[in-house]
Amino acid sequence: MSEWQPFREPLRRTLTRTLGIAVVAGGVFAAWRGGLARWPAASAVMLWPSLGGHWVELWFLNWLRPRLSRRRAAQVAARLVVWFAAGVALGAGMWLTAVALPGLRPPRAAAWRLVGLAGLAFVGVELVAQAGLQLRGRPSFFNGRG
Image (cartoon, rainbow, N blue to C red):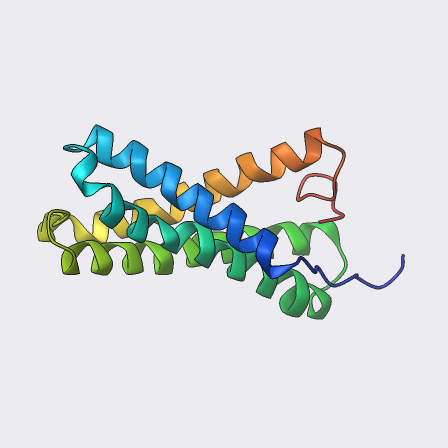
């Protein structure tokens, strides 16, 4: 097998996609949880998984993956662990941002539970995103090329 190719994408494309995801997800969350007046704040919170998740994926693909064993099991296990840990960290960032913004105050008692669930949710979101890449014939988690 050849060496891993670093993932590169123009910054404009990255920002367009990740900001778009944050705005749409923020709108869905705001509509579900109390009205569109919360849309800007909810979109700011959603930047954590959209933009932060992109940088986590870049870190894995360009820094960690080349340093791991090329065995498929090692690559899969590392990817799942990174996704879960990143989901927990990004979930904590989301929670702290929501606490700081007016109108989005989550219950404090549920913080650790929400952050833990964010880890699982991030793994799920990444698997869905990778399935989309797989269906389009692009390098993905499922085919071992991405």
